[in-house]
Image (cartoon, rainbow, N blue to C red; front, side, top):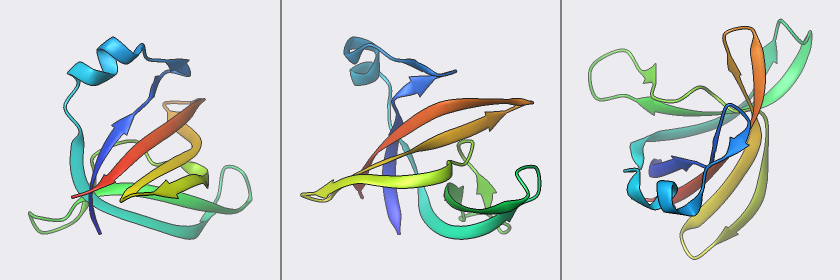
Length: 99
């Protein structure tokens, strides 16, 4: 499904509202599915934001591992989990709006 996503954290730190309001959302296709995480050696629920317009889909944002739905209201979702950047894992929350 086509959505607009605003990541609320950067490297585990909450972005101030003033900065969040200035950043444009990232538009793409949202996929949420259980996948095997070989580093954790277990299945995890993973949320991905993909650009599927030019052939092979690719990630627009680092995926959310161990994704959880915090709320769903009025065409908006809030997903939380952690993103892996390099060898580090950071807390992340996505504010999602249906396009």
